Amino acid sequence: MTPRGTNQQMPVSTPVGESASMIEAIRQVVAERLNDLDGVVALRKAAAGVAPHLFRKGDDADGYIRLSELEIVPRYPLMTVVSRLHKTFPDVRLGVVARGCDERAYVEMAKREQIDPDRLTIIGFACTAEEAQECYCAAPYPQQLAVGTPPPPGPANPLVARYDAMSLDERRVFWKRQFVKCIKCYGCRNICPECFCEACAMEDAAWVEPGVLAPPFPVFHLIRAMHMASRCVACRQCELTCAAHIPLTVLYDLLRRDMETLLGYVPGADIAVQPPLSLTLTDAPLRASAGH
Amino acid sequence: MEYKNVLTTCVYCGCGCGLYLEVLDGRITGVWPAKTNDVSQGKLCIKGWNVAGFVYHPDRLTTPLVRKDGQLVEATWDEALSLIAGRLGTFKAESGPGSTAFLCSAKCTNEENYLVQKWARAVIGTNNVDHCARL
Image 1 (cartoon, chains in turn brown, cyan):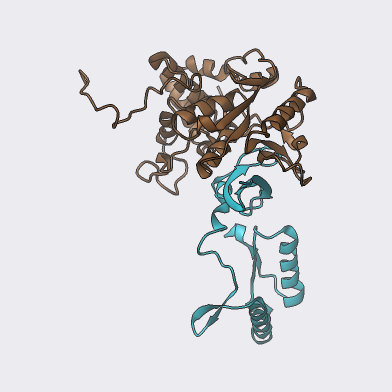
Image 2 (cartoon, rainbow over the protein chains, first blue to last red):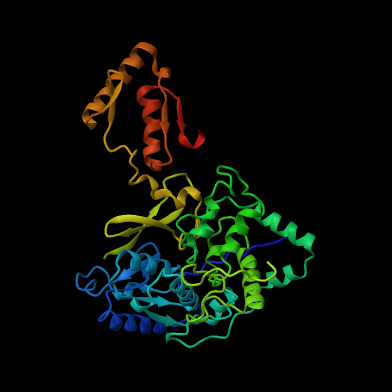
């Protein structure tokens, strides 16, 4: 059995099933919102590619940036951009064009004070059925939905089912074969919207020896996985960005499943529910818990 | 508050991965991989992810430096180039063209690399030509 990762990039051209009218509808909503907001974060199509951008009212006036350049593929973690702007400019009120995964990322970032919910307007749109399938996505639309109709959820990742059927020894071999491919580009960590720690454990020499490839097995990937417990919103950017085609979402799907089964917590589902792993020493004094 | 991403190519090797330099109010704040690039497909290596690290680095050279009395001092481009041209001519005349060598770079364009090796071979007269990718 050959373990395989997935390597899926969103096409730049309009995906099958996605109408030009949907992008036009999004552009109209953004144009309206720009009357009340300092800017809207969305993708912009320039000559050679598509990248995150801050659209502002008045950009149209100089004839340089037009809302006609607003795009929705390929997917970038736009909430990371929102977080940077919120932190750099403490008073700006922003909008963001968001898929379901973007909104989930926002929910968990807001709980951890990386985004100010009072200064963000979500302009949500639904993914296409094809996009939901490509991402094996259970919730391919945001709760705050402005454009589009929710498609059926994508199927479960078949690789997870194959993994579940493996014995413990087979699982160890599976991960060893996958992790040995790692080139320590830190792309998974860099692209993840929930990875915002200023001091990253994956760069701590106590755990990860600098200048050595392959990274320590299994510590390197499990450090991030453990830190992603209650944070991973299944946006799949890590796997899309992995230069070594490691099926990282299998690892995170398993983690998310455990979070839900053991602690009843689904990251990104409800902004009112506090993460079970958060601890505030100032508000809640430590109590001795029985048996531990 | 001006935020934009500028498409460029990684300077570190011949792969030429596509990436965006994230620019906030005129200052580079980060890097995004270019997902629409057919070669790099939205992925980068550790060097590509950190390609903006040298831009504002305090050790980055901003003027030519010329060694005078054992010390490296700032100089103009004219002074540096005149010094190089004169010394290369001297080496070639006194010790032969094979006493010099020329190192090209992945940070240069293909055209610049072609120019260097052509100049080394046809003008100076040596085939002592190599490239930083081999170091």
